[in-house]
Length: 191
Image (cartoon, rainbow, N blue to C red; front, side, top):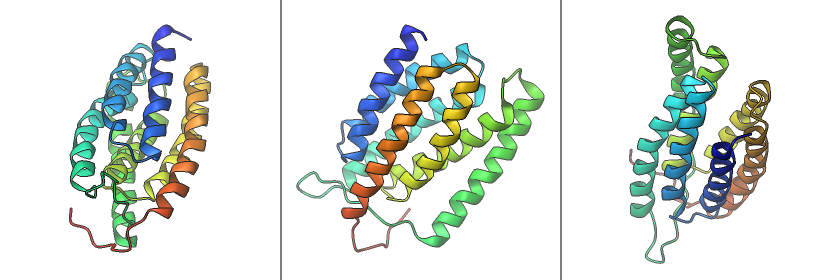
């Protein structure tokens, strides 16, 4: 357990808690958490997750803009339902990404857990996109991904980070419940 890991965990918990509360301050805090985890994952050779943090950085900027546009005059962020077709496309893209990233990292890097890391990273990108688009179902995908991340981080002896992901499972459950209450009845949404 390093100072870097401790800082990343603390900032991440606060950022996710703010996301579940639909507070726009979640986005800048998530950027800080991404930077901290980028360095940590580089240090422990989880390269797909390291690159994922950079991709999350771009996704966070996108999400910040979408949430600002998608908020009511009161500043409240409007939550949207994920349509079945969107879910299938997203999950298909996650599977394709997992195979592509897994193949690359298993053949061209010394990644510690290339296929697991690639799969979790790919589906995390889908969950992040759904979160940015304000889909309540993003939390359900986060729960599945976070459960698997707990196991991976235990294997890599990142116990504090495994603990963070265990906490994130609870935050995702709370986020889903809260967002379900605030889902806009209008399910039409443009990309």
